[in-house]
Length: 328
Image (cartoon, rainbow, N blue to C red; front, side, top):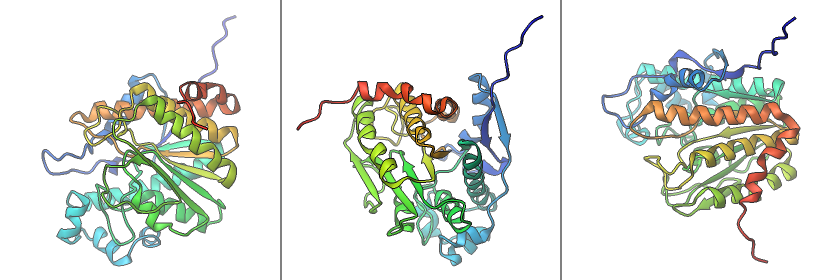
């Protein structure tokens, strides 16, 4: 009798056809990376359960953004000055996309609350402000999902862990002064936005910071936040733009550094019984498929850490091994 190995659990990925909207030819935002993601996950040998989310209702967006702005988005009539702040035109396809992405982040969070971890195959639009979009972000899916989860009573407290190279200024402003949604952003000090918002916890990093110092800083910052504030859920903005080769980044993480970062966040959370829903965040370059591979590798690292559960703590020891010396 031959014994077949039990099938591995499928990585839960929320993904919608509307995640890719057409942009003007030659545009610098790598929109097609979202379309490549399922394929590059398969090429990496990762089996995936693709779940199609329902788009968020407009009322969810209106709960965190100016309703007049939301109406303008949905009608594809955003003021040209605001479109310039966003960085691309808000077409009907872009309008559909923004609600689909917000619905995906919400659905991934609900799945994570039931199963420990899930990922949205887009999202992390952290620059969208209460009064409108900015920085390639039309509406703020992190804020929309967090607000709805709190309003429904699914969670008492959410921690947004934003490790994009850019500060999550939009989410910081939307949740300023709130105790039920806390924003932790660790970002390049000299990168966009020029004028930073004040989040619950902001850590500014110098240009050129590499793996060892970055991971040591994260190890200093994240566990105390988790232990002190005990969130029910982490919304993880896992931008890959801290990579040394990123076109819009100013940090110097390697592929291995990004994987260690992602595994560490999930392992620390799961060791405390905290669920994690991941969003892709930023990642920029001339080859969208290569950026998608970087995102896919991070999701695989997170999924492996989530599956390992409490034993994943052993997998994060390299973070501490590389910790820089501390002054007294």
